[in-house]
Length: 285
Length: 104
Figure 1 (tube, each protein chain N blue to C red):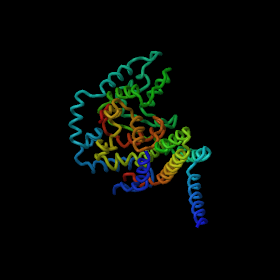
Figure 2 (figure 1 turned 180 degrees about the horizontal axis):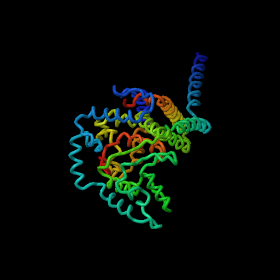
Figure 3 (figure 1 turned 30 degrees about the vertical axis):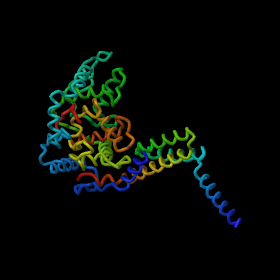
Figure 4 (figure 1 turned 90 degrees about the horizontal axis):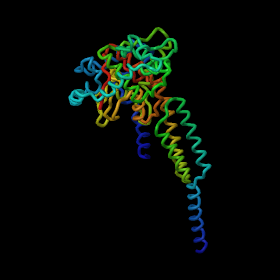
């Protein structure tokens, strides 16, 4: 433990912002459209051999060997059980006779690409997971834990019905929406934890690189495959689970699942993925 | 000769005595050190930037104190305070530095 602490402190002192690439510069003002263009350009110019739509496949778009393994695994996808369970849950009426479909446009089929959205009534970002729990509570049901299997199963099914549909995240003409976007961007690029890593340290500055045996996924399209079955977890995981585990890995105390800041990060990343196809549920090592 | 011997003995005892006094922390020492560490960690919490290792050191400090090992408990609490202060410094530095990393 003591060695780990000292090592971490040393990394915090020394590692710091030196990993930045030459393409990163100071942001003077918040401009989502300009950010989007720059983000897209950064990844497509850095990985010229990766077709744009393939970025949603995360590490498999970066590593040929890993991709071969994934294609073999996908013949019998490890998320299938969750998908079946999610479909059953989705179609089972609540005690009041209504269903999840009654809470969503198009009865909840093929709508994943529109989430998260900024709710001008509450002034908050609403993710698909939050919308599902709002639906449950509005119908007299208890909300699900955002990190656990039930929520992962439901979102897996909804993602599956949306496969191939392209992210269409909007930032309404509302200063609160822009502020939420900015907070998400800030959280994504802010170094945290004893190891002094930001989300961007891995997924912008080092996609395709390795953390031990893991191949780092590019941030472009990274949310398209959610939820995912992770072999490391031995089960399904939601976006909340992914964010909290990333925080823990850099020795930062995670926020609560679906904390406002996590929702803002998802908003930012999803906006950056606009135009890319939903590929979830996914499977990752 | 005898006087010299006595002086030497006195010096040795004096050094030994003060060294052991410096090492022997009390329950109050622990409480003070722990309170400082907790305050720093709470401040990190308001900045939404606590570290898991700070929590681990706080827990270790409490466990050592519960076992009556106050030297160890104080040391752990001081370590926790140092970690919490580092997390506060990180948050303050990153409040503006994050913009340098944005892709443009």
